[in-house]
Amino acid sequence: MTTNHFPPAIAVTGLRKSFGDHVVLDGIDLHVPRGGVFSLLGANGAGKTTTVKILSTLISADAGDVRVAGHDLATEPDAVRAAIGVTGQFSAVDNLLTGRENLLLMADLLHLARAEGRRRAGRLLEQFDLVEAGRKPASTYSGGMRRRLDLAMTLVGSPQVIFLDEPTTGLDPRSRRGMWQIVRELVAEGVTIFLTTQYLEEADELADRIGVLDHGRLVAEGTPDELKRRIPGGHVRLRFADPRGLDTAVRGLGEVSRDNDALTLRVPSDGSLRSLKTLIDRLDEQAIEVDELSVHTPDLDDVFLALTGNPEHENFPHEKVTTR
Image (cartoon, rainbow, N blue to C red; front, side, top):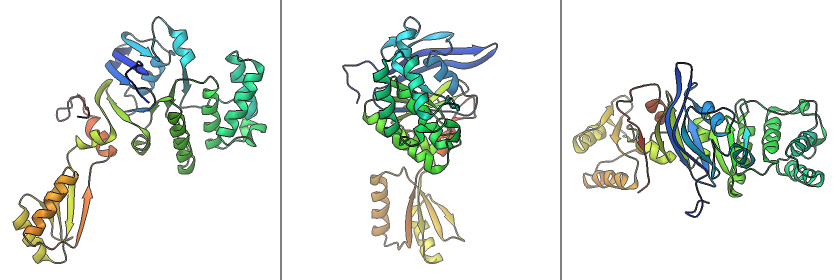
C-alpha cells in the first residue's frame, strides 16, 4: 500500500539510451508507487526490455536520474540489486538440478545461512505448489512449472521490487492465470511488480497503472480505465424488432450510425452511467421501443492500436492521465 511516508518504488526522470545511432529510450519519466503492479506496454522494439535492464542494473543508461526502492541507480547499484528481483523472458532454471536444489543454489548465491536457505526453499515450494515436483529434475517440468520455479527463485532474496519481463510468454491459459494469482498474492504482501507484457488482457487484469511506450517515448500513462476513456469509439448499440422502430429512433436520437440489415443503431457514448441514463430517458420520453441494448467501450487493444505505430501521434499526444 502506498503512503506519503515512503518514496516511490521506482522514480525515473529523463531516462535515455541509444545503441549506436539508434535511440531506444528518448527521455522517459516514470513514477511507480509501492505495493502495486505497474505494466509497461509497447510493440517489439519499443524499449520495454531495455527499460527493465537499466532499472535492474544490467545495463547503464546514457542519461537520466533513476531511483529504485529509494536507492540511486548510479551511485548505489549494489543497494538496488539487494532490493530487487528479476524474472526475464527466458527461464534461469538449471535443468540438471531439482526444483529444491535450484532454490538452495539461489540461497547460497545470496550468502544466506544454510538453515535460513532451507527454510525459504521449503516455504517457496509450498507457496508455488511445487513440493512434490521439488524432488525432481527441472528438465521434467512443464512450461508453467518452470515459470513458477523461476519466480520462486527470484523470491529467495525477499525483494521489495520484482521486474517481470513477459513472464507468461508461451504459457497455456490455465498456467497464465495461475501466474496472475501468484502476482496478486505478492502484491498483497506489499511487493511492487514492474510488469512488461504483450498480452493486453494480462495488463488489464493485473495492472494498477499502465505506461505505453512507442518509439522510445512514453506516449500515455494512467489506470486501465483512464486510458480506455481517452480512445474514441465507445457506443451504445440498440437493436429494434422492425424497420419502423429503427426509423422512429433515428428521427428521435439525431446523430447515430444505422445498420438497416441488422436493424441496429450505434449511439456515441463514453460508457458512463450518466450518459446511459440520459439515453434511456430520451428513449422513454419519445416512447421508442428497443428490442435489445448493449454498451460497448474501447478495450486495451483499442488503446494500444491508437497509441502505437504512429511516430507523430497527432491525434494522441503524450498525456499523463490523472484521477481527479
